[in-house]
Amino acid sequence: MRLFLTCCFIGLLSIVSAQDHAENEFTREGFFFGAAAGVGALQLSNSNGLAHNEVSMSFPNFKFGWMLSPRFAVEMCLPGSLYTFNAEGRSRSRGFEGMVPSVQYWLKNRWWISGGVGIGLDAPAFYDIKTETERKFYFGSAALFSTGYEVIRTRKFAIDIQSRVHWGAMKIAEGNQNGTSFNFLIGINWY
Image (cartoon, rainbow, N blue to C red; front, side, top):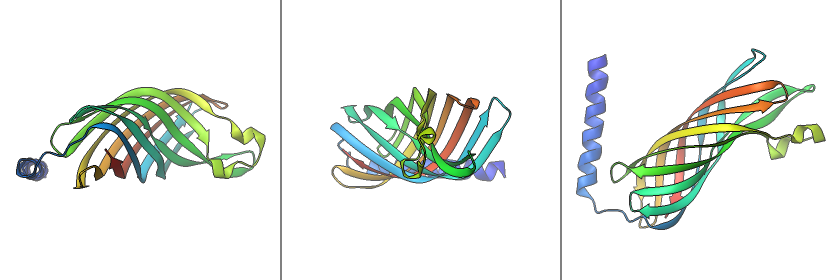
């Protein structure tokens, strides 16, 4: 099985490499903006020993930044995953989010990696606030690593598939909360 998976991985990399050599270079320059949505597995735990795992919608996910060269960019990533929180007698939606300054680098013509460290955020979902106490935001630290492959491109527009790991640690009312979100996303980017 391990040999089979290794052969599949090498075959995929060979196809990607051959495709990159066959096409013209895609020009990225100046300001860019991206948005993505998808699903993910979110794992939360707090200092009281409570753990919360769920499959979650991964939205909003925005990024914007500046291309320093055709293959290297500095950006601000705003990852987010929604989860259900039970408190005060009802279930409500909250966001496991962040504001993460990052760098993005294209290893191949279409394949990129991105990573950064920034501010973690546990925030109420704006559409699900019923009382003043539900408006509380909690801050902490966050880290992000993602990779993606551009499947459709035009001159200044690309659609990509992405995978991302987002980690965060916040001090919330119930104690310290740590979370990890593993996401699969489809993104739209304008360069």
